[in-house]
Length: 91
Image (cartoon, rainbow, N blue to C red):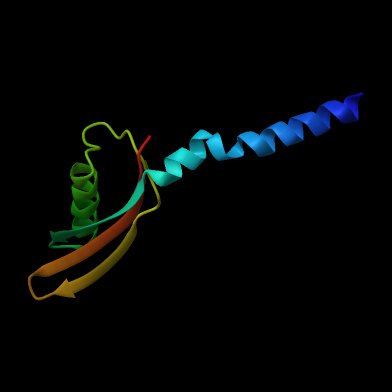
């Protein structure tokens, strides 16, 4: 009897998987990319992360899920420039 219940639950899970919220959330994801500037690398990264939140509508309250931001920073004659890219998924 116990094996029969497990089999039924397994089949039900397989049939309902396409309708789970994580599948729908994956369809609402996009990649956002912004640039920040600062006189130090840390300031440039901080500005880029703030702009990322602002540009995606997540400031002052972060409602969406973000992947770990990827920073690509370069030193220019006027300071540091950082390009930050992250995947943003709407809740």
